[in-house]
Each structure stands twice: as C-alpha cells, then as structure tokens.
Length: 246
Image (tube, rainbow, N blue to C red; front, side):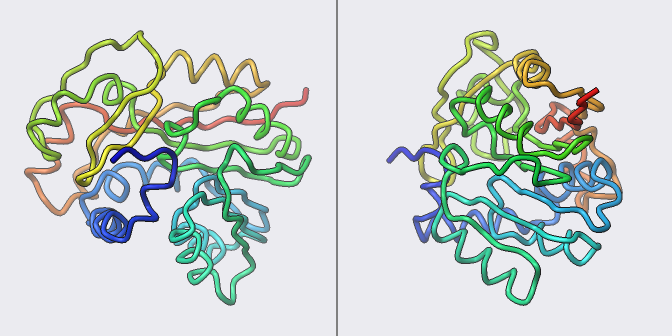
C-alpha cells in the first residue's frame, strides 16, 4: 500500500516500528541530524517556535525546557498529533493536526521555524518557503533537515535491505515523485536537487547562512561498525536560513 505525507503514521504497526527505529541511539536522527540541528539553532531563550511536521513533539518539549517562550507544532498524522499533545501536557505549546500545506501561517509571528526530515514529503516546496518567510519575524531563522538528495534520487539499492552497504545514485537531475519501500510499506517522497532547495530559498527571500551534509562524528555513535558505514554517503542535508528584510 502507498502512503503520502504523514498518513503512514496512522497505521499502528508502522507507527510502532517507526518509533522503535527513531529511538535507536545510532539512528541518523539521533547520531547525525540531531546534533547539527541543536548546534545551528543555538540560543532559543524566549523564542517563539514553529515546528513543521513535529512528530510526537519531543523536540518541542526539549526546546521549551531549554528556555523557548512558546512552541507550535504542525502534524498531519492524527496518531502522531495525539502523541505530541501528550508530550506537551503542562508545557507552553500547542499542536495543529493538519498537513503543512493546509496550515494557515500567521504573519510575522515566529522567531524560528524548524522542520526535521519532513520537507521531502511536500509537493509544492516554493509555496511553502514563501509561507515560512511571511510567518517569520524580521531576522527570524528557518532551520530544516531533509533526506539527502543523493539518497532520494533512486531506491533500487534498498533491495539489499535497510542496512545496505552501497547506494545507487541514478536520475539525480530528474526531479519529482519517488516511491520508497520503507517499514514494509511504500511512501511517496519528492526528489529535488540540492541546487533546487538553495534556489527556492533564495527566491523566497531567505539568506542561506549555513549548509551541512551530516559528517558523522564518532562520539555520537555507540557502534563503530555503524559509524564507519555512515561515512560512506551523506544521508542528511541541513539548511540554516535567515529572513533578511534589509
């Protein structure tokens, strides 16, 4: 069965398997992407934050504990949104259960907009970047991660299994839908080149401050084998941008 956006997470078996994977210490989320995101965000004291595709909002809870003023999550899966609201009980945060594309972005409301491993599910990226630009305050930051375009170009190498030792890069400049076999289902993603992301951000008005490809750091891995495997190909691409009205 094929799933678009966050709909796969409404399947109980898929949800449970994803959460088990997500919580592994050596998962790309925890060992590679997470440290970069926290480094780029920096000081969040008294910041109002919007998180697109917030998942279970554990990230939002962390940010609030670190001094953020308010956290808003947008999540398209009802099951994930329920988990997010549970994690935010007693916190200064709220969650909208709707797709990112359907969300109404208030004007100049946030100091920071984040999104983690989500935007490769969004079909109209240029419209979304414009919405994010409008919802940020002056000098507000937009920091997001995506699955690296080298790994979304082709999924034939996944026939080896999820823990593969080689990756096929094909049709890189042919952008559009990709069907990825994942956790015994098929999910629809959108492949775009790195150049596409950069150009779309610039066209929306952003200044790109930093770009990271997730160079693995040994201290974040419990397994030497997994650390060495992750040195072979980038699996994450992270952008840090600012709304510069000047």
